[in-house]
Length: 276
Length: 149
Image (cartoon, rainbow over all chains, first blue to last red; front, side, top):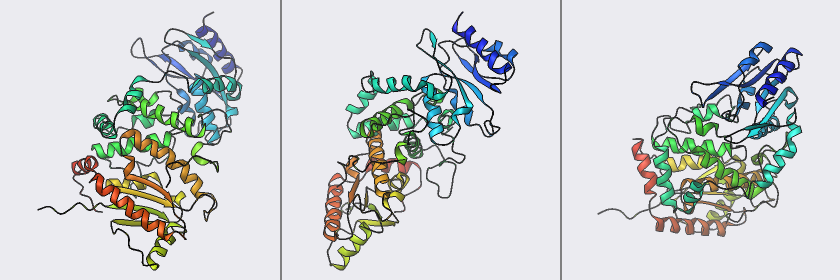
């Protein structure tokens, strides 16, 4: 039985037994290589479910939809390891109760997907720990290294060229499971921190702030990158910041549901070589 | 004939240490560069990275951030939190190409009036050498919202 059929069966089981009130998964999208989110409420609807290597979006953001989990009932959700890390972060930041999240885990590459054993976020601790272990030696994005080699001036020019295309649609924010603030800093206007018109200056500020708020929280799912209509390489900034946080504070986002957020905690002996 | 370049520098300081240090520099009659505009805040933990961006947006050529030495915070650990934030924010600034010579951090206690004056002088000199932050100024001009600093 293929993994897709296995999971369809599982979804029907947990829905008909009442273990979950809904399952968030994937269905066919507008083109052959796209998948769109599917919200399954009855066992019959499980027929529409698709699970293959094209299922790359991190669906965890749907869980923080207002009121979804407030009835204390559980919700099932299809997640890759990065999505499971998102659940851990959301739990650590008190945005959801991980006991209400039934995880249908899977992992894979461009060709095939495999099932992951476990049901609750804490069942995947070993998998996430091994990802952390391999993180420093994982192959880095060649473009990232190229940018690091530039002089500050060149880097500034590079990012200006990228950010000048930004139209401030905030799709990156909407797509990100970590951007759950009810009132985003760019939506507040007293004070107006970031210019709302799409001048490059405001674009730079917005993208810097977005990356800062995701430092130590981003799991690198790539939702923002894929959502960007003008293809700004947002993943590069996020990957860079994740690397910095790992290097400076040995913090790997989403290790457990009780992990302290990196910028809400400190050690007395944190490095401070740059402070005069 | 154009006037010689005088850098505009914004300093975000905490009221308990660095501001008191600035006060000491004043009462000790120490002279330091008049290019620095001081913004007093309750604690370094109150200094949001947005302040730094805002200062640059308003045309600052350099930004200083200073507070109590680790262990001396009036609120016991505001500066430890700030230190982590700066480490991350600094890396981000570097990656987006904002020269780190223009954004400086330091610890200056209430007893270090001399250190305060020296720090202001040395940073002003460094930024005078670097010249105006032209790359950023171009972006500011593009918004047609002239600097008000």
